[in-house]
Image (cartoon, rainbow, N blue to C red):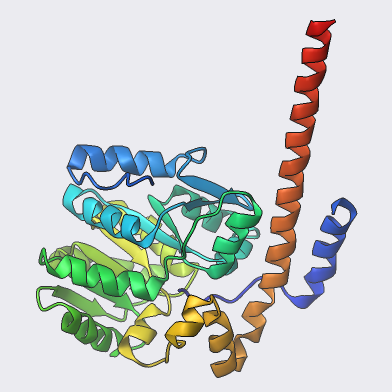
Length: 311
């Protein structure tokens, strides 16, 4: 969903190989009352919750699209501020060298599995998520759902004019959707007061921030309590797709998890971003092997203890 410049370059791949080669929501969001919403958010934040898993020290919520939409609706109705992140392999790899970003990801109220690689990694780790929650689809479906309750959306970021076009498209999906405002803005600290003033005056229910990653999620984390918008989501390049500035992959490619390939074919400059993917797979395999090793050791210790008791 987001646009990100990876911090892992080709020269780092041998180190990753060196590290690994020797070792080779039942529906928890359906009740939208404020009290239950807060409890549900705490459950999703719990790193050890059965509704989440850790991939390379980054928490990912095990939620479907339907559950995510219900969660977002509950957040709006709670009137409390919430931060939603859309996790993909590039995020996870970038967070390995950026502790502030990793902290923000793990502190979010909901961390949806946006990238195909995240879904595949969950299967490798023995905790299959089941389905990807693509950012563009999430925004469009939530606009339709939110329009029925006249939710107010504010679109922040992207190039000048693009947020306006995206807002027009979203309103076309649901006539009941209200656009509280749009503003290109900037994640720079000197622009923060003006942006916050605009958003506070607009009183949105949902804030979509397209500053690119990690800047957008760091910005949301920094301003969330000041703005008190019920739902803030970092959406990166999603507004480009919604506005029609960038073409999406055909449905059949998205269904096969090949949207990344379509983007690479149409935007060859993305090849550097793709360099993180081999390292991501290797490190996930390493995490899986380490987990299996711990499980075997634990099983061995249990068997030894039972044998001693029998003797």
